[in-house]
Length: 253
Image (cartoon, rainbow, N blue to C red; front, side):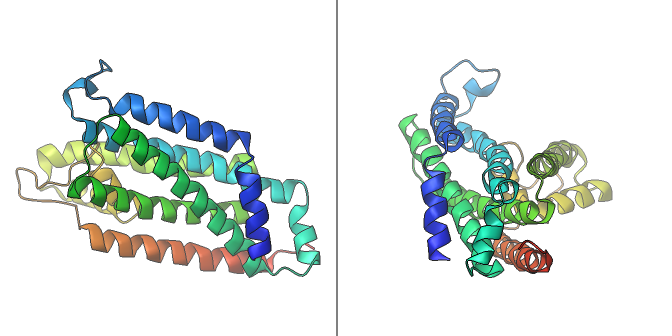
């Protein structure tokens, strides 16, 4: 597994799409996190809130980049060569999963540093949000790796990942609007429960797009940091186990 992981990391940090994504992430985060700029209605929120807001762009990048990066293993037949050389499905899958984790960790580090350079202040709330975001993205990386190993078609995998994420995104926007005005209604509670049952739900509520505070009806959907971390770990483990079993059933030699 170490051999595959090393090869993947070398390929990752030579990938022009990834390096370009890091530059775009740095510039975009710095620009958006400057709270005194005149950008739509964002000029009236502070640096930390702007920084939280732009963190959602990383999910879109993960949904596109993971299938593009890992899809080459199937398209050029590299995966067959690795199995012929004696590597197991477990080694192959876990090496790619760890590669996606490294990819995400560097991307979030760029996001965090760029936000601080733009004027964001380190406090307990921002650190908790950064930790929450990291675990949510780890879980999302595990999901996208699973999706790529199952679908194997890069375009279909990327499209599915983007659609699923933004389906939750818009569900959150609608649910948050209804939550503000009729949070005691069963439909609103069900909508927000579906959103929050995913690893990105708690992130959404703290990203300035949603609300983690009780509404006028005394109802809140935020379940806290620790349950969120546990949920992300469970989701990542579940998708990893299913993904490895699915890969083992495929005849790739």
